[in-house]
Amino acid sequence: MIKILKHGFYSTIQDLGRFGFQEFGVPYSGAMDVQALKLANALLGNDENSAVLEMTMVGAKLEFTCETLISVSGASMQPKINNKKVSAYKLLKINAGDVLSFSSPKNGFRTYLAVKGGFQTELVMNSRSMYQGLTSCHVIQNGDELSIQSYSDIDVNHYAALKVNHNYFEETELRVTKGPEFDFLSEEQQQNLMSFQFSISSNNNRMAYQLEEPLENSLEAIITAQVLPGTVQLTPSGKLIVLMRDCQTTGGYPRVLQLNATSLDLLSQKHTGKVCSFKFLD
Image 1 (cartoon, rainbow, N blue to C red):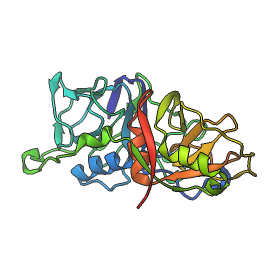
Image 2 (image 1 turned 90 degrees about the vertical axis):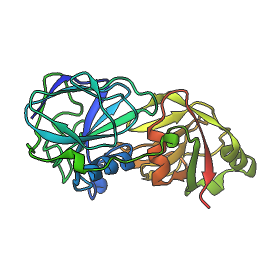
Image 3 (image 1 turned 45 degrees about the horizontal axis):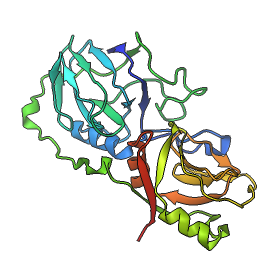
């Protein structure tokens, strides 16, 4: 069991997501940075879909009541076990009574904590991903207890750490393909969309990232149509909205671009004021 001493700013349990229910209006959800989730689980030998703790902007403080193994990936939130610094992307041994703490990230925006065997929390529609109105809680709170499996008698010195290139936290190019309504834009609008550098507004969360700079827009709304995580919508005011993991399943704004999976991970590690631009996939 893990006791939540401090929940951080916005911490949730996530796996790869909830698939097969979009026709009923259920979002995909899942980890914002899928690659970080997979790396954390791989270090532990977990199934890649094992549930992890996703922490945003400010990390949590956790007390373990049993022995286990953990790994940390994503943004550098300076993890500590019993106030002693430990490394990310490395197998770490936890003893009963140990306290794991995090702070604000030095780079990136979201950090992932994986435990051996995955978090054994509520399973809804084949996923443990928290989502408001669907799971019994949508964020962890102080005093919560999260169920995990106990593991002991494993020598972590026999396991290697991973070296990860953290330059992707600073990467600004988002790779995209044309959205269904891209060709409805004028040539000038298309050129501006693909040449401007946009900054992330304060309106960013697990549902969507709104970009600050407007793009001249003369397009009319479309009939409600399917959207996906990574869909870039153009609003009547000219604002661009990039849909993220908890996005709705349909929308009525023109879909001008579609991010690939890697760029969606990259964007999830950016926060207000960071910049980005779009580039077509080769």
